[in-house]
Length: 163
View 1 (tube, rainbow, N blue to C red):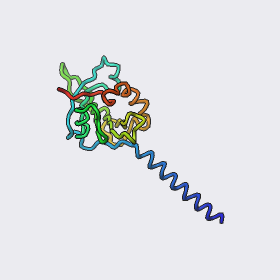
View 2: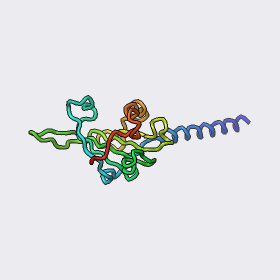
View 3: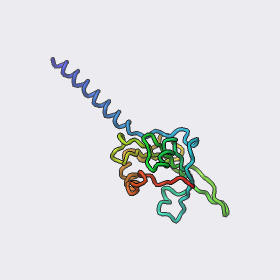
View 4: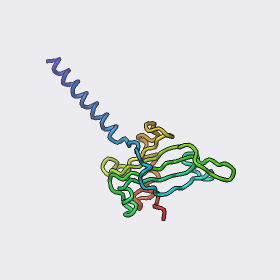
């Protein structure tokens, strides 16, 4: 009888551990393969006088998948919308600026159920050219949504389509 209890307990622990692992990875934002083929929304630059320069300084190329393009039109993004902020350092040579290396790749994914606590958006940041080195992880509510929450009227999205 004791062996049966131990086997049952081990089975329950395995199922519980599997569920916890699945739950942790269910919210992981995937690297947005092929995003440079999506709609280019706009490019902006954050210069050295900006308080955001240390982290986000450089060129910001913003891309949107098809669902996010519709979201820009409606000012309300449907589930499945993905926005990418490709942050490239700005390198000055003489009086011109050109693109240097990638600093970070920020990604927003709309899923109103999975990310209900952060306005329906999941956030991630990938370091430089890495598809696996994540910088945000489970700090999205403090590192991303705390700023995005200030713009609820645009479905928590700062960027606008360039006219």
